[in-house]
Image 1 (cartoon, rainbow, N blue to C red):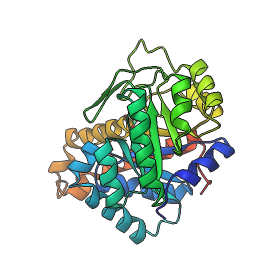
Image 2: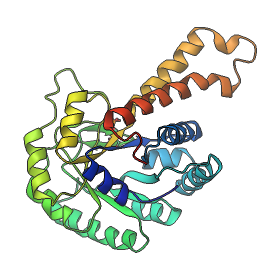
Image 3: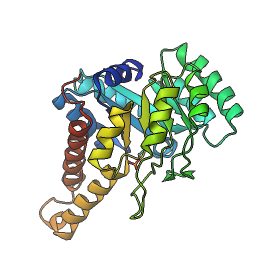
Image 4: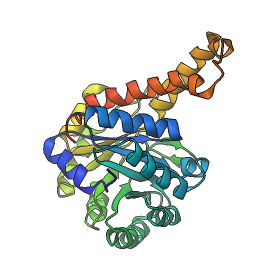
Length: 287
Ligand code: 13P
């Protein structure tokens, strides 16, 4: 059942769990995530970066594929189709294409410009029942060409953006996209607490979910985090399982070259990872 993320995340915040945003890249990814969500009765957010949208043939292709899969797989749990780290133009295109939620990442703009652009997009999205995520203090690392310096967000700026009518807020607290370096200092919980207090209980978003230790995930949920994004981890387990299949020579046995067989171990690996995340974030049985 396709829906915006607004209600999903208010419920998560009030129920003290987080909904996973799992980024998708193709049909296999999408089908895997939807099937696990249905099996575990968990709400889920499908994240699509602008790069992934382009790869799949455009935002319209993605929206139509997700809608068709949702329908033909008989998915009854709440599913949100969300643009991840969208540009101003990209956000407008996704609203047109049929996404149910967009993230406008204006974190690299001066705060006044971030406020102005976020305000305009909120107006357009809200008129169509589409939820909006905004960002303050860029997330470190690189994702599909979007590079962030890893700033710690200012609670005052978070309060300004949170008051614009957005549905949930991403704030940099030392989190990084991709694999965390050995010398990573961990999440800045003092800042998270200040942001939580300054933003009127708005659901908060934790990007860079790959590799954050379990105790930090649980503590973050306790401090208002209601959505956690995971991308790299699914890519890593998919690649490792596919590598093993080929290194074991299975693509050369019988019809092992058939893409439905070749991609099966990767699909199973994604499903296992998504299941783990739903369990860790506490969203199982919440749909
Ligand atoms: P990871 O790739 O580190 O899991 O981060 C995903 C993310 O934050 C998507 O916006």
